[in-house]
Image (cartoon, rainbow, N blue to C red):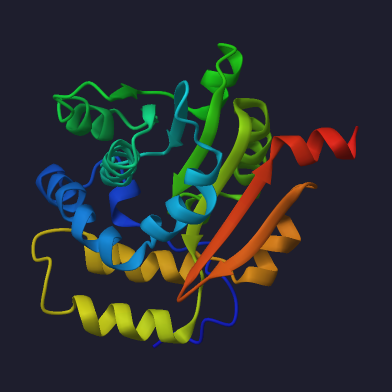
Length: 237
């Protein structure tokens, strides 16, 4: 097992390779639904950070940046529907492979799929009540992370919530053992372990966050990086 004291910024996930095996990539997208249901904790994040600011008397909007296979996007759409909210979600990812895989998987029309960067949406003047991402922060270099946070401040009318893995030896060990006999023919196990090595501790993420962003640990191994537009407005320039 790696020591994990420091982030492995140079580790590269296989699915980020534009020349990776496409069949394995598609299986990875398909298997994200199970993996994220177990490890990503989005139902708790939805309950604590998203649902409290949704309203029943109007259309709510949400942007998922770097949506990948969009399993988190679809889960949030289902929870909001169950809770009686009218929520339209835009799932954006710049990777044409992710866009091609996800864009025909929403027969209800609750989700709009876009092949776009967050900066593209800022340039187009778009805004959303809520902005989220899942497992995106650790993929980014320092400049791209600051760009994402800056874009999120421009795009989110109410709140932005970026959820990512919190690096720890326990998370690494449990993921290694728990995924070892499963997920053949995909990048789930290999890239998951690489993701943990690349991810931040709570203190590390707090140190690189922009002003007005807050970091808190969500049990058992998540970092939640959040921004409230009202707080930023009150803080002034």
